[in-house]
Image (cartoon, rainbow, N blue to C red; front, side, top):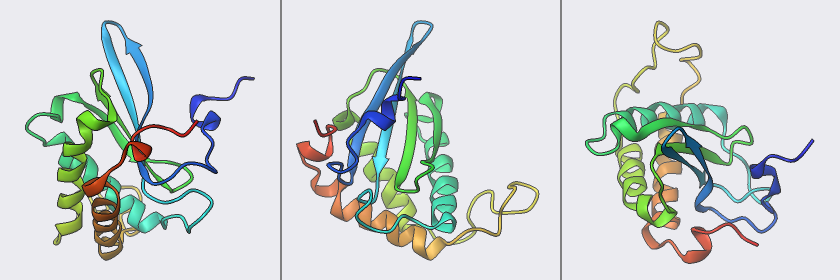
Length: 159
C-alpha cells in the first residue's frame, strides 16, 4: 500500500505553522485541506484530549457561523496525533490566503469564556472531556507564537 500524503511529510523537520496539506476535486469544486500544526511534532508534548476537544467545538462553531466562510467550511477537527487540526474548505487556497481567518478564529478561542457550545450530554458524546482554560492558553500561544508573525517556513511543508 502507498503511504497517504500526510505520512510523507518529514515530521522531524516540521514546525508549528499553517500548511496546505492537499487539494482534491469534488466535481467542479476544489477542496483545500489545511494542516494547522500547533505543536512541534516529536519535540514537545502533544495536546491533551480535553483541550483538543474544546478547541474543536469552539473552532467548528466559529467557522460554521463565519460571515464569509460558513458555507465553505466542510470540516474542522483534530489530528489523531494531537499536534494540531485539519481544516477543509471549498475553494482553491494557499495558506497565506487563510491566515487572516485563522487569526480571527484563534483570537475567538483564546478569548472565549462561558459555556462551550455543544458541551452538554444531549449535544456531545463526551461532553465532560473539556478544558476551556487550556484551550484558551493553546489558542493564545498559537496565535502569538505562530500566526501573528508567520514566516514562509511556517506556510510551506519542509522538503
